Image (cartoon, rainbow, N blue to C red; front, side, top):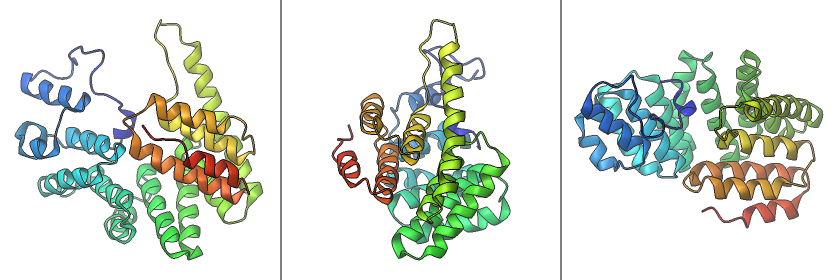
Length: 277
């Protein structure tokens, strides 16, 4: 299920999706959408486990909420039924990485990356695992591998701001400031255009960047040494997305790393002081 992160919800405004005809399955999807599923309940629910897509979406929500043990329990059951499902296996590796088990994530992800190196989602998750190995070991070879994987994925799609911003940050950490700022500028340009396009929509609905787009734009501005609003924008993101504590924690960790690399220790300390809801 390669598009899982693009689905913030599976239903719209409480209306029944025209794609869902089965009453029982609609109930499953509604529960996932509203975060009413307990993982222990989920693994016992044959309706949810009958579709890898709903398992993947629930696992993503659990990971985003920093409930990685629950996600790993759910995914461990699911991969017994769907042993070759790329998205479920990716999420298992991602959950291990979020848990701090970089070696376990590597063992899970490297065979998948060798099989699907051209998959952008796979490239991003693998690069993130390499970055965790670098954090754990302080061995620059892992940082170089991380940068190479992010950059390779970004070359395939310059609109992928996730791959682009991580290409920029890993370049900074490797001491390549000019490359970092060039990538950060390209990422910021994509996000500004995206924001303008959303603002121009005239359908009486408030549109805004996704959480990850907002966090990426903050990081791009920081890399470009435009730090004035970094703290306020990050604090606003935490207020607007109180349930995404796992994602916010990951993003803050990277912002702090960038700030310290840029000798902005006061900003790093201020970011760490922002409470996650």
